[in-house]
Length: 294
Ligand SMILES: Nc1ncnc2c1ncn2[C@@H]1O[C@H](COP(=O)(O)OP(=O)(O)O)[C@@H](O)[C@H]1O
Ligand SMILES: [Mg+2]
Image 1 (cartoon, protein in one colour):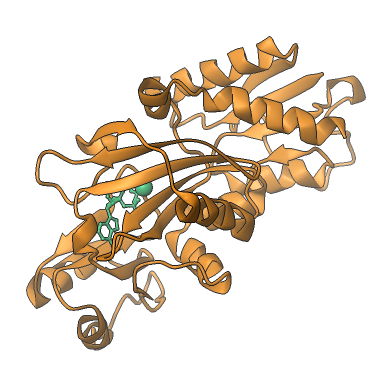
Image 2 (cartoon, protein in one colour):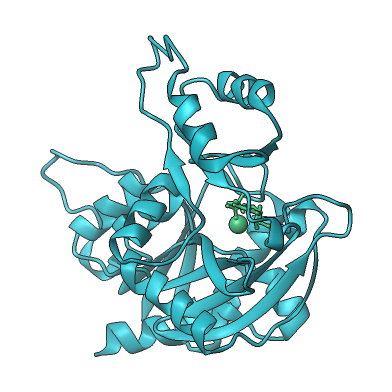
């Protein structure tokens, strides 16, 4: 069986190349001839009367480990099974779309308000909408850019001035406002789901006073056994978004009950391996094999 692993040409740091190596090794264990290509090596070529892949080169599946949703959709249009799907990656990449999909599926989340969209050449000519936001969420509140990861585009603002200056700083990029879940400050749970199964989970906690528990942000981790509610919640998220595999981040409300923080289509699985010994790459490859062989 032949397969492609697509990664991003321009975001190929050690962290990413290590994950790619793990995926390639997982494929090799299952006798899959998987090749690594970047999104700058296979371009989406349309309107030309040619076969994109000469027949014997056409992969049996693509593991799409990137967010280049245009290329992803193009590969799907060629009739190749692609994991995750372009649609699911698109929903996860944009936190506002994730929350809309979770909302449609009635999945519990922190109170979340989407900033009104404006045009890059216009910006916000007034900030009156922030009054509604402040009235509903109070301070401190969480501001998130819709596109971001590793906690780097997630901010805590404590008053009107900080809110306004953060919104001005983000400018015309899409953003959302969220109730700060104080009971979960500096702690969350990452649940790794493959197919309709939770394969492993970890509890992440910050020790430096940061409200974000991301490991990249200095968070610590330990293996975690999700309860039935948490397991079901993570699987419901994956189904609602149409993902094949994902890392689901959960927060804990004041009653200790889990609610959904965000869903990651390309969840890094090295940290969770280090703390639980579960290799998500093996699970993903076995899952994909099950899908393409039937
Ligand atoms: N509403 C919230 N209340 C409390 N903590 C939050 C909230 N939203 C996010 N966090 C913390 O910030 C971290 C990063 O937020 P997240 O939405 O997962 O963004 P990223 O995609 O950058 O990981 C979370 O793992 C969690 O620890
Ligand atoms: Mg996260």
